[in-house]
Image (cartoon, rainbow, N blue to C red; front, side):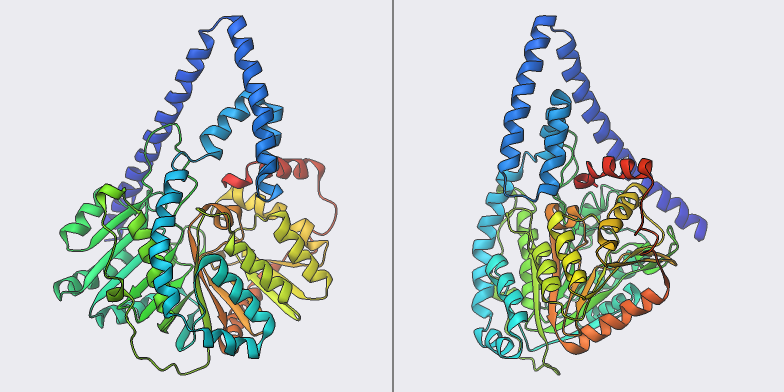
Length: 525
């Protein structure tokens, strides 16, 4: 059985690599065509092309400089285009821009204009007033989320934290068995293998019972895990299935906007989110990078409506207008189920989208850091920070806040790991403590502050999550959940090596130069 699984896994990986290779070859051929056209020009014409590219690079650099973006993302492009005008210009046009962005922005705006008002009408202003009376600082974060993304604050919701992907999935499968109306699943990566087989078995059973089942995944995130016929096979089983932003040949092959969200909604009453995808390594079936660590949360109650809207946003935007119909019967998916929570939890699920200029994920993290008085702990598989985030974290440590950041001890991407470590020094010299989890790869995305508020979701501390990806998370104001998350992080810290002092001194000049060079490409990692 093990040999068979290995063979099938290799076949799927080979299929994904073939697709990536085909796209890469198409891209290279396009570049070769451009080069051949240029080499066929006379010296006078080449000089004119170089002059035009130089002038264009200067103008474009000024435009980039004036953009409402963090300098950490603007300066690498400006440096590249001014240092190597023609090459820098071509790279920016191919990678820095996304040709479909304008059309996608319009589509998402239209969808959100229909979804968010329905959601906010179901929100309760009394919930906000209640939190304001308890904690005026915390309510400011909640109000920012509501005003910038439209997602309201909820109570009357029970939240359960899982310190492993396996525990979360076991409970998820139990809830699937009790589904009566619909099951929505949206994940960055799905692997058509052991873990998915167990999920698929239950989904097919529920389809046969008349339950509506939808599955949504990111094409790039799943490219090495599933074959091209996955969508068709799901449809044959009665499971509605769509892929986000399929990878296709062409000049603009670097499609930066990926769906990194991970969530499940059951009957509009129960929801799951967290850091794990639906692939075998997340559940410890395979061990490519030592032990793998993930986490998740289960919601039951009013706040699940926000997860439903997050799913419907992506589902309805996944296909061109002519090929999809918008879910008009929203009340069917946003029902008012009578539910009495067991505690007094305030929770605000929210989505972050690259289709607007609001960096909700980063701003929530920064706001929590600024409100911290005793401690602020972060867990992230990657650490590629903007200047704004670095400043906020460093300032908190200078105020005397116990700031700790946990990253993996075994990398899944060595280049990204090198860039992650390059960010240790500017944090450490300001009093931040850095830990690396020695058993393997810690994929959790967590933040907890002062035993009162926390964030659990999909948002890494890197450019890709904070600026390029569609993400989702839950901001939670609840002492019990915050303590539970803190205790889990402390258990991870106990298994980690502290590298604070190692990165606090002077660095090797060659290593520092190499890290600075890699940072030029940090936005793409």
